[in-house]
Image (cartoon, rainbow, N blue to C red; front, side):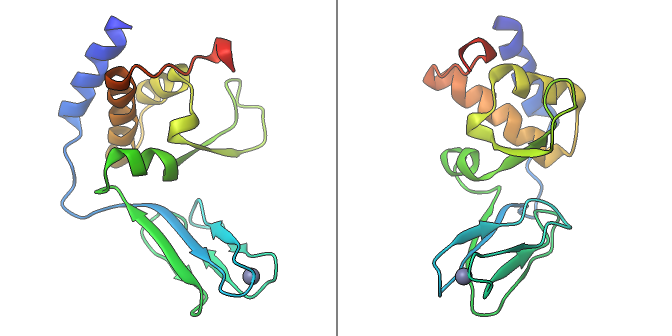
Length: 148
Ligand SMILES: [Zn+2]
């Protein structure tokens, strides 16, 4: 655990906040069926259950949505308590053989977060992962694989 903490601090230093806020959640609420839907990645075109609303573009920097849908959009300049419950990471499981699943940062295991930091990725995303490890450390939250 101590080594994890040190690694987190090191990583925080490496990932300064970019000047432009980055989208972490691209969703809409349909005014007709009240479904909340969200697009996870650039080619993730999602429609609501009644078919009136759609959202597309994921968190890659552009947003496309049906004009009457109610936007639900969060950026990485929100407090971490919000970010951890909206930002998601795509995963295919530890052995990379599972169907792609999108997991909220707040629901990733400690081991998974540490593995992502080792694996690397976009700075803005790694900063969220490092922030989550620091948040768990501060609030004494443990989400271990043994308990899943
Ligand atoms: Zn609908």
